[in-house]
Amino acid sequence: MNRIAYVCTDPGIPVFGSKGASVHVQAVVRELRRRGAEVHLVAARIGGDLPRDLDGVVVHELPTIEGSPGLGREQSAQQSARAAADVLARLHHDAPVDLVYERYSLWSDAAMTWAQDHAVASVLEVNAPLIDEQSEHRVLADRAGAEAVATRAFDAAGSVITVSAPVARWVTARTHNHEVHVVPNGVDTRFIRPSTKGAGSPFVIGFVGTLKPWHGLEVLLEAFTRLARTDESTRLRLVGHGPQYAALAAQADELGIAHRVDLVGAVAPQEMPAQLAAMDIAVAPYPQLPDFYFSPLKLYEYLAAGLPVVASDIGPCAEILDGGALGVLVTPGDATELAAALAGLRSAPHQRAELGQMGRRAAESRHDWSLVVSRILATVPTPTRSLADDLLGRIA
Image 1 (cartoon, helix red, strand yellow):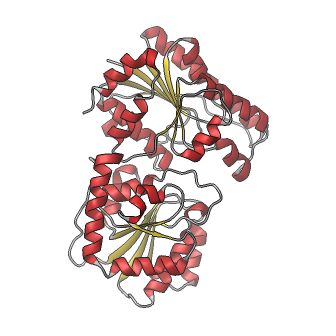
Image 2 (tube, one colour):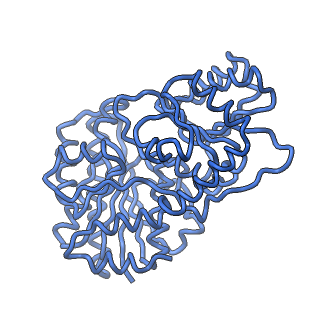
């Protein structure tokens, strides 16, 4: 049995939580378990009980980060990251660790350097330009230190996986490592499946995600208001929580549509299939962003659920939706165009059904996590190919 350590030292990611990053961690760990690996999850923040479908995963919780925002907290975060190397050393002493898989965190290079020093195969997954994010949206007291940590981690990794081409460019600007690959996100098509709504249910336009500015939800509310003027039976359902929750509730009230907007809040990952099943159309209304580096989990989930999709034509959305063959693409930030697209699908049940069926097939054949993890494992360097080949051969 292969012994794998999955490391996440980011204190902002509760590995058993409900946010997108949490779902991502659970998905990769779940897929590694399906291949028969013994998985040790080394994390700074647990955030809940071990999900039942992750039975057998051994959890190692790192020391809690303390201190106020700024240099003190950053130094504490580095100490927490270094503690991950101590956990790896203990595991390796008990029985050899075959692979260290780490989700890149802002102050973490210890796991990758430990793996390099001990000739253990390693993969570093980079989901976002965290240094830029921290500097722009939060507090980054020691940018030079963060850059140095990132370079050490990228250089030490056996393979670096990025979720999009912009993230790959961000990584390659900071490393001499030639093993930098783009592997977009995926979806568990066994877990999220199409479902038939009950007769008499209201027509629902839905969104799933954290309620943050870069999701364009204020534009979605404006578009829905225009649709609502001529369609009295359709509702809008926003699944997720975040800093814009109160502002969106206030906007819905000001627009006179609060009674038709369901702000569901955060839901546990196991509840997501039921939330998607309550929708008739799913939306990803991203605004115009200067550097769209996401690989939207929501789009893959929408496709897996067999939902017709309306998405902004930005970043990889057009590629995921086959240039519009698997969904309707609209201009980012254009409420009029978004409203027209929603109204068009609302009045075209056959088109909705066809898009849903094609989207489901695409999710199964291209985007299932089993395929994504296989692509990741295939990047493991040649000296450790036997490990990757063994895991690749154990697809459930």
